[in-house]
Structure formats: structure tokens, C-alpha cells
Image 1 (cartoon, one colour):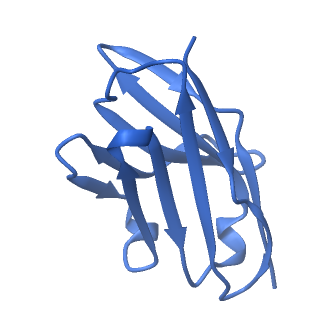
Image 2 (cartoon, helix red, strand yellow):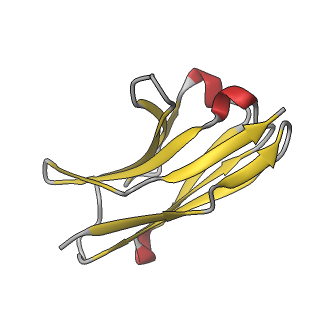
Length: 115
């Protein structure tokens, strides 16, 4: 059974940085896409960053210039570096992976940015 486990969240001050890590287990398949989504209280879940097997990436407008995403093919791990964090980045950050039409989600890691 595929499992995604996120880590790296926490409490940080405005302008600070965090690196989120998502580790997948339970499969030898290479995911077509891995990415990060976030959901703030009272808001819908939204895409933050996505990386494909060809290493192409998509970043939400709010993430451009501040966040970056990378992945380790051999270990089924995806990373997201977040710099210059803002209070509006406060949310629960989820990892998502897709393969052959199936989607897998982690439980989320909380990021809180204090002003």
C-alpha cells in the first residue's frame, strides 16, 4: 500500500524558511507527478508546486520566486524549499503523488508563519 509521509513543517517568523519533505513507500513505481498542495482554515485546497517525471515543474503564482520543488527519483522523495514566508502561507501542506491515474495523499504537515 502506497503511503506518503510529510515532514518539515513548523512555526517560523515572517521572512523565514522551511524545507518540506515527502517520502513515499509501498511501491517501486515511479510516480508521474509529485507535488504539494495546501489548505488554510476556511479555504479550499490549492496547488502550490508540482514536479513531473521529466523534471518539469509548475508553481502557483504566489510561490514563484519564493518556493522551489525537487524530487529524488530513486527514493520516491519530493522536497519543497520555501523562502521569505508570509503569514498568508500558513496552512496545512499536503503531499500528493500520481501514478497510472491513481492519486495518493499524505496526512499533511502544518506550516505556521507568525508576524
